[in-house]
Image (cartoon, rainbow, N blue to C red; front, side, top):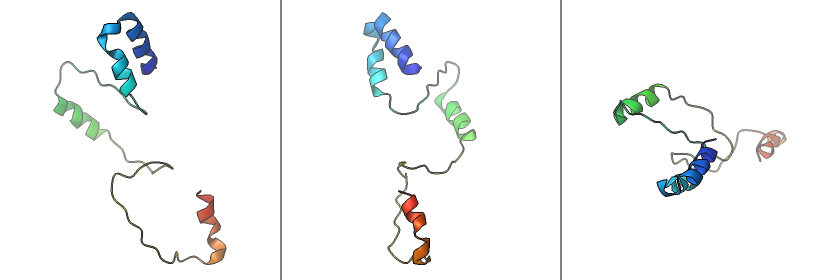
Length: 86
């Protein structure tokens, strides 16, 4: 919806630079419009309401993780689990 609103806004006001903003948007994002608080206040509220969630397929980790090669602890009949992950 925000991309559509920026597209309509660009059609009405082509000199406002809304097309550059729309072009830079990737993925799920949100805008915060605040006129009566500081950036630190916004960070504090966001930090208070942030929750961790389980990883999903295709996500990139923000920490380096190295898993050494070795036995899985499972016998060969239980390896179907790993093939189902693909």
